[in-house]
Length: 222
Image (cartoon, rainbow, N blue to C red):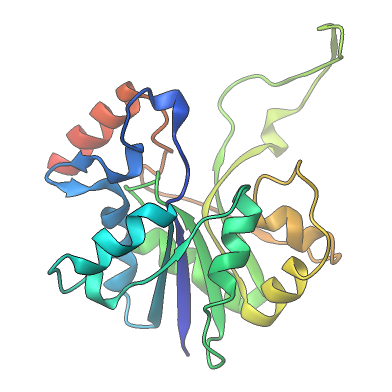
C-alpha cells in the first residue's frame, strides 16, 4: 500500500501576531512545519510527501541542504484552504492508495495516532482525527440569543490528519466547494460518505497563539 500526506503550510497565521508565518518559526530548533513531516516520513507506507507553502517560500526551501526537505514536493498555496488542498492533490502520483491531509500548525501529531486514523480509513474509506468536546456548547442566533444547549457527549472537535481513499478525495474536490468549507471531511460528506471519527490519544492541538507555541515547545522537550 502506498500513501501520501499533504501538509498545509500556506496560511498567513495573522492571529499569531508575527511577521513570519508561525509554521516556519523555529520550534525547538526546527521549523514548526517540519515536525509533522518528520513524523509522517517515519511511516514506511507514506511514499510521497507534499508541502503546500507560500509561493515565495518554495525556492528557498528547495535550496536548503536537508535530506528530509529534499524528499518533499512543494507547491504554492491557494486563496482558501480548499484551494491549497486542490493544489496538493494535483501532485499525487497515480499509484497512491490513501491521501492524508494535515495542518502544519499541529506539530505534535503522533505516529500512533496517524496509524490509528489510517487503519480506520482503510476499513471505511474515510477517517479523521478528533477529540472529545470538553466545553458546554450553545447554539446561538444571529441576535446572540441562546437557542439550544447541544449534547456534548455526541460532539467532537475535528483535527487532522484526515485520511481518505485517494480516488474518493479527488472526486470530492472535483465538485463545487463553498467558502464555508473548513475541512476535508465536509467536502467528502457531500458525496454522501460518512467519515469515521478516531479519537487521538496524544496532544494534537493547533498552534494558534504564542501561548500554544510555548506549550508545544514544552511538550516536545519532554
